[in-house]
Amino acid sequence: MARLYLRFYFALIGSLLVFALIATVHWHLRGTGTMDHSAYMPLVTLASLALCVGVVAYPIVRQLTRRLERLQRGVESLGAGDLSARVPVEGRDEIAQLADSFNRAAERIEALVGAHKSLLANASHELRTPLARIRMAVELMKESADAKRKAGLDQDIAELDLLIDEILLASRLDAVSTLEVNEEMDLLAIAAEECSRYHDVELDGASAIVRGDPRLLRRLLRNLLENAFRHGAAPVSVRLVREGAGVDIVVNDHGAAIPEEQRARLFEPFYRRTSSTGAGLGLALVQQIALRHGGSVRYVSAPEAPNGFVVSLPLRS
Image 1 (cartoon, rainbow, N blue to C red):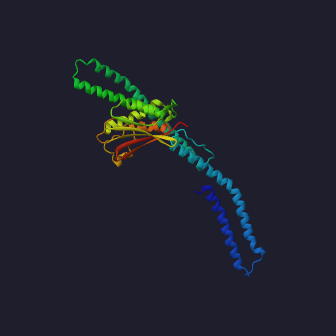
Image 2 (cartoon, helix red, strand yellow):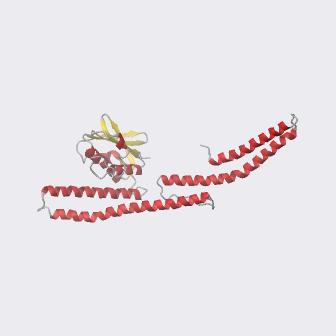
Image 3 (cartoon, helix red, strand yellow):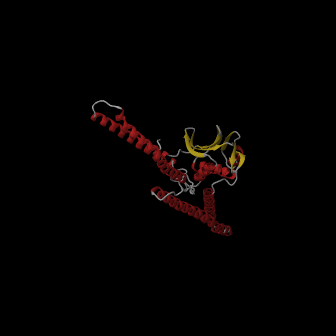
């Protein structure tokens, strides 16, 4: 892609040279039909003029487009998630006004996102107190309560507790740009620990050493397994597949494949498919944790295993 300043520059030089050529031909046709050395003087003069204009115009045009390039990098950084991205305001022209408008807009966005994160974290934290009181009340009414009603209350409390825990974790991952713990671990060992919590889970693969937060990676695997048992069907399998400088965690189940039109929204926070249970944060957290570890997650479907999720992580460097 041609740079803007080069296009301006070459357009200016080209227009002057074309004008010089047309003028020389015109003067030649008006003459006697013969051209002496003096006929070339207009061309030489205009070519010299074009050279002088080019030399003078180049730094001016380049300075202008360099400011535009800095503004472009700031917009790209903001779009990539760096809410602290700002650009220098240079001069008092239209580009300076544009840079100032961008900085003010970025400040508003950063403040709004920060307030949103703070609201989520504080609200989730405050919910812990009434939840503890509800749990205490349920314990006190054990003897007099109907068994079915008590079981329903226990389930509601467990779901609320899980929701609060997931919101707190999502807020913490949004608020912190780096891992709180970054150590080497064997992914196969972590997978074995999580698979042991469930029946009818098959684990296969070799040792794979990665760097990251063991607690978060355990949560990633646990959410994938919970999703498989809650929305899929047994048997469930977990495989670790080495791929070059990375490793894939493949979790498959034998439930019905997710329709194509729903797959693009699987990792959106609070998205729930029709007739689905849960808060809709499990897969969103899987994606957040994978991205925080320099990896990615995607949905896959194959005839032998209709439902599957693949998390790709880099191996220890």
